[in-house]
Image (cartoon, one colour):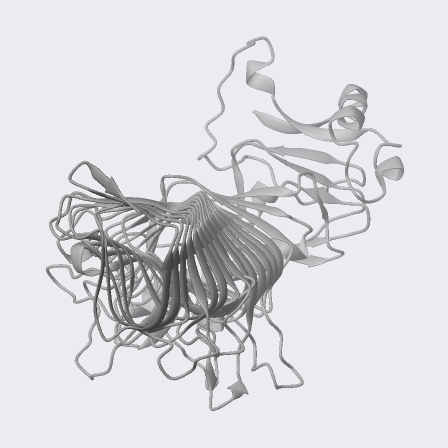
Length: 627
């Protein structure tokens, strides 16, 4: 029979085990304490207690300074029970249910004894451990397919339990085996999705396991979030499987329904999301944005965000979207098939792995995206691009391995380096591996560097329109065109390697209509392609002051390189295997080059050229040299 027994020895042991309690430790151990002991098994070392049986003792008439080991069920039967000072309740597999415990000063309780049928009043007791393990059954979560009402209750239980845990000083919240649906649709006017979802409190480490499955209850809402960070700070979310409802969603009311995310961050700071698996959102796996707009007095942006070690797969829109934020690191994640169609739902634009796209319109800045690092990620199967920067400052994209292309539209102080981009589909053969810039005169498109990248199997390896950009030490393999230039100012293209066996492939070309290359130097590149090493057309014809140089390159092609309808070129000290043709070239210099060809002419100045200087070149035709 279990009974309460005073033991001085327990007091001494308790001082060692429980010495980290946060309140009244000295007073707690001045008197003997009480423990639960099974008298019928006093002489049996390995006695086993049935933790699911009702206790044959109660908590009534406890003395101050008592310690109770709870290894059975204490049913309060709906009553409220006042406890004396310095009472300690220890968890050993049992439970306290159906009532209220009113604690006095100096008391403590194991967090595992907290539950949805036990209310706690009086002086808040201390917890023996700041880590708490959430037992879904104990707290009333109903797993499996459920009604909307039950799924909403699941959401409320989980969120409220995290809030309660924080009130007790818990900083680590653990969930192991659970597979449940959560109704996260908006239920209050002006609620943001990050508030309607399972909203995390600040200063918490949420740890989930591979056995933790959180699912969005199927719905017809355009905008939802499974996990929400709403003005939340100092949180780590680790592990777990998050499922959207893309294939069971109701799209019947029209529209894109592209704003349903498994994780949404609004105006939150110091957040880490790691080792999470995100699947099948109607929108994005992770969405990062602000509270308010950049011009609002209450504006709060996301800051110091780390997203690492996650697997983000088959989300209907994007893997990750960044609308607003500073100091964001996206590192060592795996992106799979984001934006693709499934048998039950179509993807929706823009269908990327990562999309950095702050909202700006008509010169008004609504959102800002600065200081973002995208590194060491693996991407495959995205319906559109792998990584896209619509606009941003201080963006670093490095050491990624992708199938989809990398692109920016408006960016400054941007670096794209040491990435491996491998086209594997027929679609990649009509796309560009790296796209840089939108308009050379845009003030938001400058001081960018593209280097150390390897691009294979694309129509165009790299396309650039910009000013103040350096493109160097990249390798382009089996692309139809290695580098395609459009409007370009104050820029350098150098030490790149372009090789291609693709029929009619070309090395460095200009896109039609390129129009302008001013103060641009193309130097020390190595090119070995099929049709032509250089193909430049329609350059600087409207401005005699614009100049560009092609110097010190080593190039080879079966066909002739063409320099046509251009103005202000210096073509100097190049090694050209394949010959050179100039048509409509003005105010240019062709000098000190070594040119060889199997054709009839080494340098073809056939027509419409004016004010051309040609001197110092060594030309070799079918083995016979001439100057």
